Length: 290
Ligand SMILES: Cc1cc2nc3c(=O)[nH]c(=O)nc-3n(C[C@H](O)[C@H](O)[C@H](O)COP(=O)(O)OP(=O)(O)OC[C@H]3O[C@@H](n4cnc5c(N)ncnc54)[C@H](O)[C@@H]3O)c2cc1C
Image (cartoon, rainbow, N blue to C red):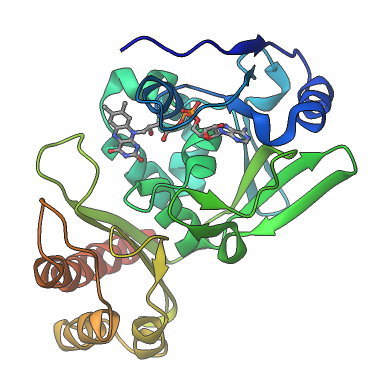
């Protein structure tokens, strides 16, 4: 399908991009890797008057570490993050999730900021961001604001970014000693969006769970933290029985959507299995890292 007629702007700096967003507001869409936006345009599901292409804004790319946080520029390509030694060493949960996104061709164009601004609830990175309490840095004409992950995802493909704001950076806390992580998902084929996915992180101290983090993809219109299960895990020693109980708590009261890939009940069963599997893998990793 042909793309609709649309005006095109190609800023070279964040300031220029922000000025263009302020000028066009709701009429503009930011173009990052285009892996989600271009299909939406082709299908006429998005109909902006102006595309603001930020591929030429070099200052939006890169990975750095400061004050215990790993900072990733919004335009950092998914494959660059996947190959980053800093991310592998300091945010292993993100490193585990990245290779599960689509295929290499998609990850070579798709960006970290694009995935998190798009906010598909079945996508891997929103679940990772929610599990780790990532921070989102947005820039507008009036300056910068930092949004915690708990306040970023507002609904299906909806975030708390205002139309005149640019997502410039996402910050993930560096994993501490004793932290093990795992990203688990069930998809029809490798590279498909997850039917259900789970981001899991456990931090062990003297064999006891000091911190537990679980977030699902694919069970709601936003990524969902399993707070009840996290409470069950904290202060306990890892065991199969404990992980069974966590799986029960994590899926108690959830009501996943049904579609042609599976019923609500099927998704619930997958979710429970992923909690058991994810916690086992995270506990094994944590043992290795202590
Ligand atoms: C065949 C196929 C399979 C895929 N499979 C998966 C998968 O399994 N898992 C998965 O997670 N994703 C998958 N994707 C999507 C892929 O990860 C995309 O790269 C990602 O969702 C969007 O990133 P992008 O950089 O291409 O953003 P774009 O498509 O350019 O933009 C997406 C949206 O975010 C907005 N946006 C982008 N950057 C910014 C910014 N800096 N500030 C403000 N707004 C911004 C855009 O305006 C647009 O609304 C798949 C895509 C395809 C085509």
